Length: 279
Image (tube, rainbow, N blue to C red; front, side, top):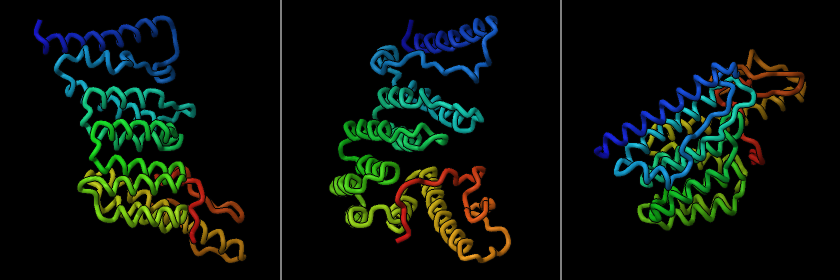
């Protein structure tokens, strides 16, 4: 049997196994599939590379699509106990099958670092994935920059973030703004203006539309934080708010007594936590 036919037989068997297991599960009267834990039938990157023969990149594409489906489906789920348990194993498989798939490392790191319920809240796994990418492509400054972003935005570890920005700046073809960015991060980490500078550079230089859009969303989150601080201060001074204040996406803020907060239905929710001060 040729390698191509063998690969298609393997994929068919995997798919058939999933269907068969679900059929047995349904006949046994179990809960709906959406309420049961997801399963990853091949967890070992080494085993999958052996099974893939010479079709590593084809299977990497399959697993990358599965990764995006798992993340997106879980994020949009209304299940209060939503879990992203398969996210890192899927990303590990994808990047082991195709170590040059840069988008899987960069997008995957954002998916992993995003706090619950928008993601699993695993910046440690995001860093682990990006370090794997840097081991594969040691001269790719984007991986070092992304590790710095994880330390800055999600871990709020500004000295480590500055170290990674400095490391990224020393790599070939790195943009000139990384060096002053490292200095600003070290001196002013935690200030919203320095956070805004980070995301503005990201929005300006990102090659993928998704990253540019995400940077714009982060900038709107910072705008919302500024607005909430201003509106809260006005209420505490006993001043009436004109009309119905809305966030940068047009969704009205929630006002409860002297407290102003973001509506959970806003696409800016949840706002970042941590010492992102105005000054």
